[in-house]
Image (tube, rainbow, N blue to C red):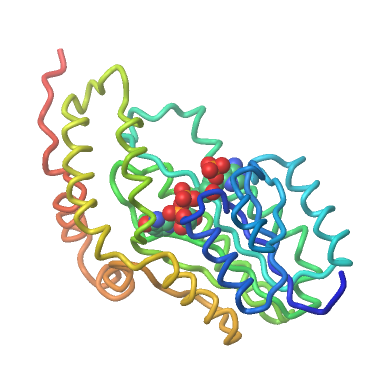
Length: 287
Ligand SMILES: NC(=O)c1ccc[n+]([C@@H]2O[C@H](COP(=O)([O-])OP(=O)(O)OC[C@H]3O[C@@H](n4cnc5c(N)ncnc54)[C@H](OP(=O)(O)O)[C@@H]3O)[C@@H](O)[C@H]2O)c1
């Protein structure tokens, strides 16, 4: 490496307006050496044109993680100051209709991949007194219809908090982000329509109607959600300030920070019924 700029690696940077690419641009604008990664480098041509290093990385693949670690070490003489685990796969399915064999992929992306990256980069990050950022979600409190996404993200958030407690004495900083809605959600909303079980769910025959109602309701909120640029600034400001801990940003995240921990579970269930339309579920006649 030709200079001593701080070095960052970010996963899941394929979407030009997604959070990963936006974090990459924010760090680049602050003078960091950035390695933006995605499954296909062709999805990051905009970042490459802006002078950001791009590497292919499928976080669900052990071999791909090992190759990326090798490539980054080679390019930076083993230096890393910041690792951001951002890659994710969204999901919209009743839990009882979810194919158990497909669960593994969510844990591979949200838990195993980040763990492999954190283990591989631990020594350089500790040497630089660097930071790991794990992008979590308010869905991890148990958002209906996102059970596998939410539970794997919850596992990732616990993993992140444990890492902070086990490595603070070694000088590593770890930030767990409980992220609320960001206006990048729009593309996710459209993918929800293609995720409706086919053939239709036996227990939830009106699931398509429920999904459309959710898309309508969420769509109205998307415009009020902060832009990825604003969320990226919040996160990188926290990194730059030397913060280590848990942070909340994005629309509605303060509700989950302050209100959810203190209200009864029955109220949480009622709120979810209203916001995720579980109150539209109709009894089924099972013969
Ligand atoms: N948007 C929101 O409202 C919201 C709310 C709460 C939390 N979050 C969290 O914020 C983060 C960014 O969200 P976003 O809205 O920017 O999402 P997004 O546009 O869906 O981005 C997710 C990224 O992860 C990548 N990815 C998926 N599987 C991968 C794999 N196996 N290996 C490497 N990359 C993989 C995707 O790449 P491909 O294009 O190759 O699939 C994509 O670049 C995620 O961790 C998400 O859970 C978002």
